[in-house]
Image (cartoon, rainbow, N blue to C red; front, side, top):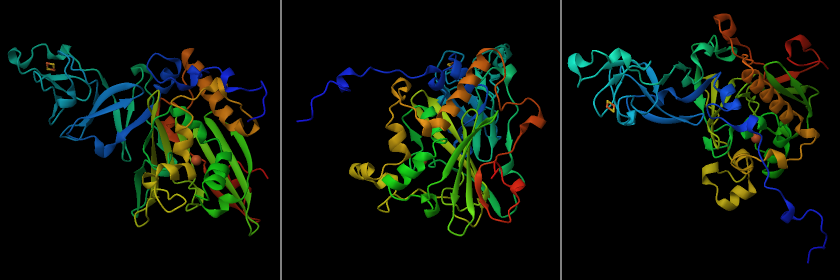
Length: 404
Ligand code: FES
Ligand SMILES: [Fe+2]
């Protein structure tokens, strides 16, 4: 029998609570309103087509389509006439037509036709289907779900500029969860994971066997830096040849994370950027945008210890080779912040949470959050994450966050 003591019995545990300022995504909640001040990727551009698609974004159910002239539209599904869903609508040259009585709506919600009305709708201009603006960018459709007078300029990222003929941009959606695209847990669990470099050594090396480049098995010197726009982690490893691998990971407000390739296939500034999409409070998708040479393979599904992909593992093998999906979903649909024991190695997680909560309060007080701009000059974003090799002859000025 186990030694008898009154200490620490599970019978005593409390139900626990989560921090609403971190996890709520619905309209009208303080954190949901912060999220609504940015553009979010909601689908691959190829998914917006002439067959309407139900999408769920920040807890809102919407219909995405692309009209026959190529314009994508994102509308509230419930037709403003008598409420049937536009999911069954017919996509035409300039919009989507409701299947019930045929009202035709443009991507900006304008009613263009009412076939059952005299003159096909003398008052059609006074009816508008609720809509949101969308933008195609490098293979993803982005939407802005916030107040119209606060709509920020659409950002451009330096790593996707000045493409050459032999390069292309692809969308990858298995980076965050090691296989699945979506995970049944709150988005913040995967967001803060990006500032948790210690789990790379434990989960992805010690527990599940080396999953990345062998150089990442060297224990690094880890530090974190707070910026106005987000948080970075630096991980410095002394390599056998005397150089130092200076690896920078980056989290930007509100949902972006920039992770240099764990296979070290790209040295210098990274080639990819990911966004966590809060589908609702308990479901999350992550999209990565990746720049590569056309003749290069995109980083495929990761292979677990016994050479299988996540989808081919048995339940017992998931237990032997757990990864990001198992650990983040394993925290529960919404993790219980009140029951955590944050320690020194969680400093990056604490920094990400503090930055996010500060911004929630900025928006609640009527201000504009970090990382939004309203003019073309504000649109350009320069990322810094990467795998930087620092040798004896390296000019320190060329290496971000290097002060050795
Ligand atoms: S319900 Fe859509 S046109 Fe009548
Ligand atoms: Fe991970």
